[in-house]
Structure formats: C-alpha cells, structure tokens
Length: 200
Image (cartoon, rainbow, N blue to C red; front, side, top):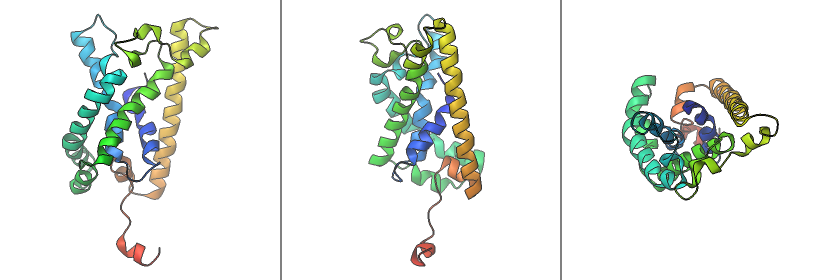
C-alpha cells in the first residue's frame, strides 16, 4: 500500500474535476480504510492487515460511514486548531450534503483504486474471493523477472515516488497561489463577490 498520507494527491486531483466536491470528504475518505491496519495488527494478527475496509463491500458501507462521521465532526476541529484555519469555513465544506456524502464515498473508493495495482494480495472482492488470489497488475508486470516479494517492493516504490512527485507539484501550485494551508485542507478560497461584480 502507499503510506497512508500519500493517498492525498489522488484525492486532491479528484477534487479538481468538480468544484462541488468536498476536498475534506475526499481527503478523509482516501485515508480512512487504513484505520483497520493497526486494529488488525493488535486483534487479528493471524489475518492480513488489509481486509474488510479494503474490500468493496466494506469500503462502500462502513468505510463511507466512518469517513462521513470523521470528516463532519473531527476534521474541522483538528485542522482548524492545527493549521489556524477558520473553523466556520471548515464546518461549511464539511456540512452534510449529497455532494459531501459522494465525496466521502469517492475518497474511500479512491483508496482501493490506488492500492489495487501495487498489492501482491487484494481483498477488494473479499469475502467472495480469497485476497491472495488477486494480485495487482503492477506486481504482475514485474513478476516474470523477480520474485513476488521483489515485484511488490518495486511496485510499491514506484507508487510512492509517483505520489510524492504529485504532492510536491500540488504543494508548489498551492504555494504559488497563496493561502497554502487553506487550499491544502479546505479547498480554493471563495471568490470575493466584489471581484465577480467587477468582472475580475
């Protein structure tokens, strides 16, 4: 899997496809499936650390519900206090609307889409298909020349590099526009009404 924060660039790019999307919903949704990893390590260490929340059925149900709750109630408090951003603006973009719910859902699904190519086992169709029977295409690409463990390492490394490069590019673009942390965690600042009136 990509390290959990490296799911952010994918979520951010999705937010740019439609201004109605909630960036916080996409961001929280994109990382929420990984909350099961420490739980699996502690309580179910005989099972893979990616299972229910990394399956379609788990992501579409519990994963989306968790993303909605965390984004609505925790995200504004944590982000406003950590980055000194206006809590009212965060509360507004985290308000429950159909687009907000869709953002949380798409964010969770984006996590699965990014994980799938580079895993040597995929619980995406669990419980109907054994996760060890579903090998990601990026791993399969390198398997003719390498062991499955090495193929996974290469696939994972390439995915990490791609996400880091994307994040640097996104960060540079935000920095050049100003309001870096606002754009990073809330979205683009609202256009001033006066600027709209003057045609600016």
